[in-house]
Length: 159
Length: 447
View 1: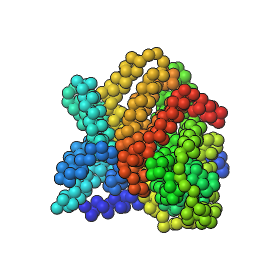
View 2: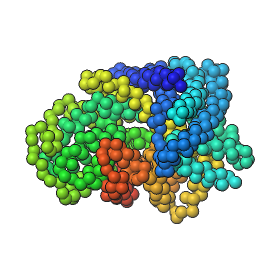
View 3: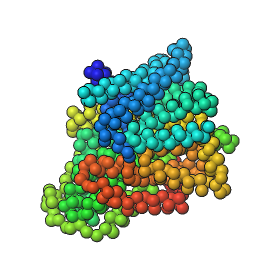
């Protein structure tokens, strides 16, 4: 539990750095475009990589800090024991299971990307697109780990 | 069997959302379970699910969406550093020191903050913390205060640079291009974020003006003696940095509308301005602003990814065919179909937020509507006005929650408070439907 919490703190800091990187690359590209009437495919690719990694990790960060949008027309959590059991039920059925399946589903794409050491589609672009694609199953595994973290924290609370 | 599973899936999605499960997991998990059940029953091609990773990679590389986290960061930097609050203080009293002037100030400041940040939560909580006490001192009714602040604070969703418009443009442009190609136009004019920003500007300002007209018709509000520091009336300051920040951030939507920069570039410039002021004013608040921006980005993109899975499975169950079939039963032309879509979106707004509706409904209905001859910009602006209503409609109007977090008011009283403003929004929707140039004229002139 402590390990997961520490991991998520690091991930949040890393994601914040990605957001700063996204800003820096967009502003640099704009500076090059308007200041020198030129551009850099590498900077464009870096924007893509920073943005892609950011959205994958930010979904996990929002899950860990319980920021994802809830509606609660029927407030099942009001009844504590039923609420906790219901929470465990959907954590397994709607988070653990689907994200586990997403890991499985992404393997062929990621493997073929690794086989060709896929890089940017643009000439003179950055390499390493396969690393970005690998973050997809990594983020899905992270969600599965977070489900366990959440379940343990539920058990801690109830005991 | 396919129709039964489709019905069960859609019902389960609504039931799951209403039971308090985070929307992202309902939109992602329920369709995957339905797809597995469908594949076991032989009515769903399981290999369709292998399209999920490429779809997510597509979202990760979608350049239109780069602007979303940057606009969020800009808003959070303004909020955390207290600059938005200073800007708000600096603008209060702009219309004078009477009760009615205070109402106009609330609306005017909301428009300014909407241009600057576009984050509804930040605007409403700030207005609740600053303008509400002043309005209470002027003895405005609790109901009027709640209605005016929640409605004005939600203007950020329609006035550029609105995140809702950026997300809508992502969906609309794809459907528009596909429709043009299907009609034999192999060099279609794309629909950009700038088109939608320009299209939504006049309706957004009309909405603000309509709120002002309504506010001026409300009797009541006692005059409070003015003091130089505004303690007993409207807080007045001559905080030039505050005014400067807000004024400089007007450049962000203006530069996009005039076609000088793209939305993504403008968002980065916005972050540069807000970040520079934040670093000077409260450097310790920059890191919390970054962290909150990351989490909020996760909230929005989680729903985008999940809704993409939902629409994929819906198509797998031929839900899009059902929708097209339903529209084909309507009288000739696209207007009945459009009215039906607007009604469905309005009803969905009671339960869902703009991101869910944009990414679940638009990909299904937009291609059909465009094929029936509906103008994409007009449709997008109608959608964004309609989605704006969802911010106020009980029980799930997100603006209501934000207001409750800063003001003590009975829930039922809050629900009653927003009714006149929902009526104004509906009226604008009707006007927009009857007079499409309200949305289509400015883009045709500017872009």
